[in-house]
Length: 108
Length: 119
Figure (cartoon, each protein chain N blue to C red):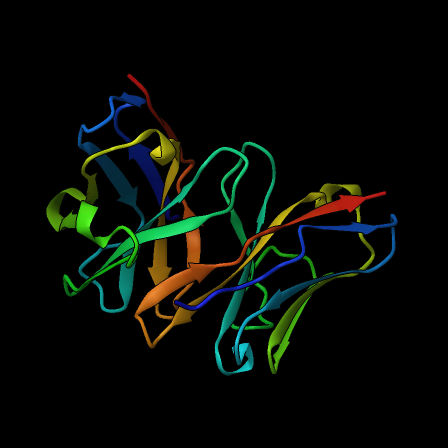
């Protein structure tokens, strides 16, 4: 089965840039989506199809995808960006939705 | 405005069958491209996709749980039902339903419902 690997945690200084990676075999050939989940809340879609932002998501959130790694970038990090972040793909070979292992982002 | 809400028991005993209902509004599950999925999250752990039903009644299941899951829809009631048999304490989790449209991602989520499996 297809697997997505994320770092357990990422720390970023207030106002700086955080980059969260999502590794998978030839992930660049797939559409990658990203969710933000704050404690006690449901996930919120922040990036879809690699680099598109839903309405209401700040421009500080951006995404890229190439080769075996997709990346979510949070620019000018704010305290409110502290959350768990999950990547997700649709694996057409198995017709399954796959979530990453999740990354906890801490803003220092 | 799309909303989804999960409902069902908060406590089930081991070996019992869990039945969860997702009641939604703001879209129709008879519209081409629409799907409703179920995702769960054990306490302190990652999200895990369980199942999804499409507007045309096509269904997909997680390979690891396929034998235990059934997903159905009632378009007239705007509901999707997930059943999971032979519940075990490791199935203790918050269960979410979510809306899916075309792009194979989930753009709207319910608030989730915590299900505890314990005798």
